[in-house]
Length: 173
Ligand code: AR6
View 1: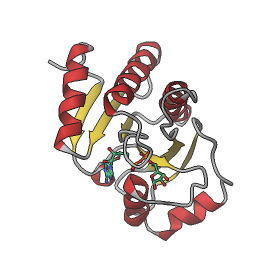
View 2: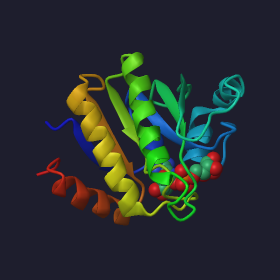
View 3: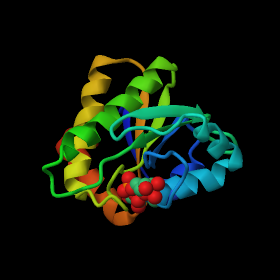
View 4: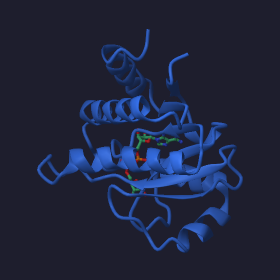
């Protein structure tokens, strides 16, 4: 089985070692997937996040998963899309890279990513998906942990875009 998987649905339902949260720099919760993760994990998650004192764009921090089926949450802060001249591509790649590095450091074998920055932060979906796939692919070629990475798409449209681009990259039949 490929080490890269694609799934459509709610990331808060996944029973993996870590789900990634598309957070904001306060790490104190928000809308979108961030809100869903905090609601499903329960209030203890925000209490642990409070102790982390925020997170810079492109960086990542780890907490427990509390009431989630996932054992951990890796919180990363994607860039807000401002037209492409503010290092958005590099910052988005850095989110995936630092999340994967944290997973490896903690020996987490299975990790699931939402489509970071492509919702409220308005990063163009195809461009973001290419960056996500390329960064994950390169990391997996060079590291044995995590063993498996799942891209989670909330909408059918996002799923179709990921499916096409993963096929083009040779990662799906
Ligand atoms: N499971 C999987 N994916 C989801 C879920 C879910 N339960 N809910 C939404 N998505 P967004 P961003 C998808 O807006 O663009 C927050 O307020 C969604 O359809 O959650 O990085 C933070 O606090 C989209 O494809 O994150 C920040 O302020 C993807 O997740 C800001 O939003 C990302 O959309 C971050 O914006």
